Image 1: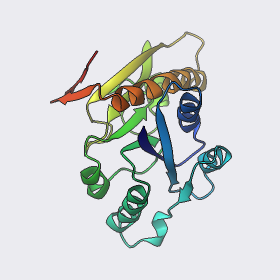
Image 2: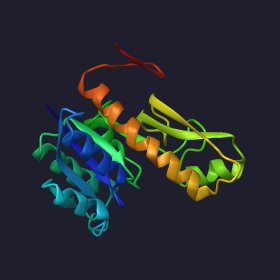
Image 3: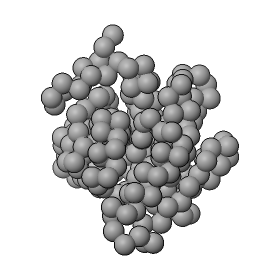
Image 4: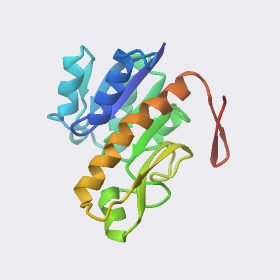
Length: 201
């Protein structure tokens, strides 16, 4: 059973989708710890409700990003974490974590990468006038939202959509493809070949 850590900053809806996928036996995994850089993030409360270790590590208490990430890494190691998941985690990862967990960090992004990286991706897509939006699960590397893509899901933009209704429908798909990508990783069915991720059937 793969041991997972989830890094969060907000409400934790993707965290909940992962928890649900484990509890309904879709995912053969264990969330060992949930770590937030925000003390009152609702995601921490979600974790506690399910008996999961919930840890707040305040970046403001550290002299540098490296020292903050060293503390995060210490927590990951103490829980024997094998896979790190970013779920609404609002900090860009630095060398400390990227090196320690190379090719073992996944992220969910609410756009069809490489289009619309960074913050407010759904709103970016909506304002740009795209006809199709969506979400992407990818490996995390040094480039912002730039790591090799594992799975993507398209969401049609409707004529009567607002940025919020579009974001809501994208989120529904996020909750489906993130557990699917985690399952593929846990079953050792992903191979990174340059820019591409090969899924082994």
